Image 1: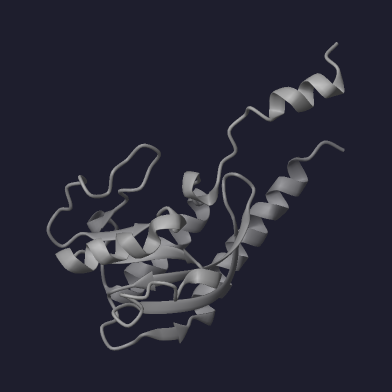
Image 2 (image 1 turned 120 degrees about the vertical axis):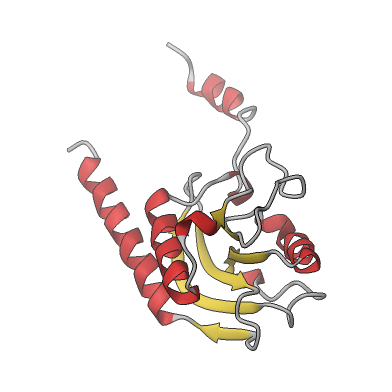
Length: 168
């Protein structure tokens, strides 16, 4: 039997995931995707997801008429948006609500869809999430209660499933 001290010691060396390392739960991603397709008149086959562990969004080959719909690393979100804006790549990205307006060079070139979504990411982090896009040319910010409702409904369902699966 291992001692508690040993387990605590070993745990220090296990790398911790941040929201940069985690994917959005598939059910939430699909709900957002369906909303985006309906709102912007795009089809799921136009959507690309260049963000994955070890991936490089700059070397990703973006097909013509593609739309990036993904949860990018939040720590470099402004740089990602600048890259896409400079190249005319359409995007709809997950963004932490607290820092959605932090891109000093881009805040007025994108639309900030401020939502009241609490998403539990793969590592268990609960992040108040909004979205940013360059597909609304004439808006800088708007609330989006419909998308908030959809995402939070899926989140509640996932949480209820999780609770039902806990041992009694």
